[in-house]
Image (cartoon, helix red, strand yellow):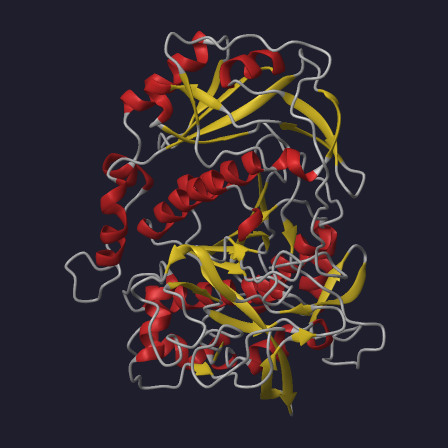
Length: 560
């Protein structure tokens, strides 16, 4: 996962809070039936800051209500069948409309939610085309009454201001089973990126203008070069999940420096995000540039949304429903134990839809090693922890005469940096997660991350042009888009042979790992640790399966 540009993100300090409204009484909720609290929607954001005041009652706030899927108990089995090579349904991916017809919330469920909203004076501003969410807006006073909450203003440890509900939202009992999560009652910006810069005394590695590996060096190191003259991502789209903006002139400078001739990125703004480049600009620009370093002709779609629970879910849902990109790259995340469980479950539903539609999702596994919350507690990153996401860890990559030399797991014991990895406490180990080393002394029966890795050490980083200058970036924020670029090249290669796109990558990647293949698709990383878990032969919780030999990998995937 990606930290801030220079260092791993720091946990927000937890402050004492008051749960009582300040300055005004809360109106009684409008409902004929008793309200019940929505499990998993606890008021986590309020616990991260110091109470300042009650939010002005007349302020208008937009809220997204994520609905539970239909036939949810059948979905995992359906996806497993979809990715079983011997199945008659193998890679017969559905469209968003087909997914909605089979698994989407019913029109009746949507009607119940919209009736609840309008009865409480809220305006229904959007119903997602897959029926998975209903967006409503109203004043703070109306929302407090509708959901039985108090909405206050807070300040966090960094001095940043945000608003949040001070207690768990509740809804009438007749719709409590319909709604999974309520997002928008807080606007706390807690997701961080996973990019890092090298230490000032770091050696000059790579031939970029300020150091760092160039596109040519990356393609040579990971054996993309034999494909590059024919398979360059032409005709493929890659979606980026971003909570910040970028400046096109920086991207253009990068393309021109390396003669990539890449298509101009297309920006998709969600939830009225203004697209301005802020403190996370470097993350967005490196994501675009790394994708096109590996797949120069791929069209990059940059989805941008506010950094909030609501912004996150609305953006992911937009990517799923647009279904224009068969590859998705994510360099932002939040440690699992700090994630709101209902929001995480709603995101899981969207990621399930992406798997059914044949969309590959790669996410940075984090830059705090085995301690994703930045504390002494073992934890993993969300969404890299999700079974329908390929979590990407980090290595230190050394070249030899411009070719692959050696790799070890990335870690820095002084700065407490390292590639993310460990055990989920939420998701059980998926059936496809098998192979040498998967069952190990740390195994608990729960999902293990990362799945794969790539170069992420800032001291063996990537040549990037950002914010008007050449620099070097590392972090698993670089490793995730590198893998997404590989998927784009694979999909072009597959399409030329009349084969299906990669889709959810993990079943295929692990199958290549645990059964004999014509070519050796992975570099087994066997040295180093991620501050806790050691690299070993085979799978390990520091590097996953390993790093790619792309030419071999793509030939194995496509049977050629």
